[in-house]
Length: 301
Image (tube, rainbow, N blue to C red; front, side, top):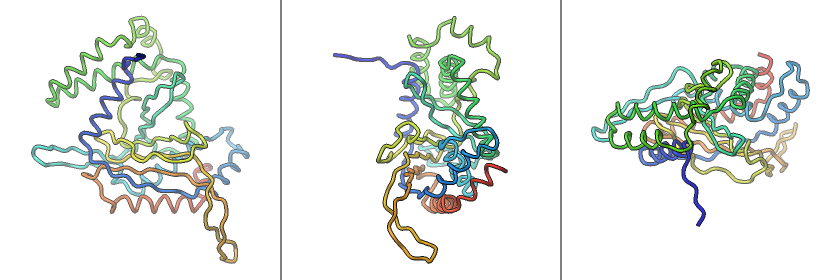
């Protein structure tokens, strides 16, 4: 029988996702965005390429989601909840730090913290992501990942989760896949500007996962994406799909045409949010996708 032991990265993922499903009451809403005009405008801007920077659809969708988050800041929050006392607090975060899953060359996925994306233009977002790609390719990302996993277990100890934290901490320390002394020494020699550091791997304030960038042209959508506490909201973006839709001509007449549709799964923590907060978020998305001229404003500032 073939088998494969969990490596350090898989241990981190399994620990956080298990914790998520045990502790967080998930609610999901599936939304289909008609992105036909937005993608057409996006294609035109990339052809103009007036700033010498090629934009990706992934960055465009990140910008759209972040703009919707800015309009409904309640979804960009962290929750503290005591199940024994049935007490809790939801703190709306000032900065929008996006946790974005990133596929490594070997197929593994690591979550990168894209910091302060609420303050960045579309071009600045793309430059930031391009820099992250350079850092990932030039350093051994398992070194900062190992350090983050150890520090997170220490935090669990401080919160009083003794047995669980000690077990996980020992698992990380004695993991055969953890970086060796040579890897750590080479990593430490690199400048901070040229490598992924532990803060790049810390949880953000909201998760945006673009499955469509990994499986392009795939029909379907992710039903539920896990919410990694203390976050309260997660967005999973699917791939662009051609679907029939109602179109109005200049005279207001309706007809059926081919539309470019992007499915989004919006998942929220029901302890912190209700549909009363999610509906305005969807309405903001509707507005953005219906006003492709916003893209030119974002691009040229």
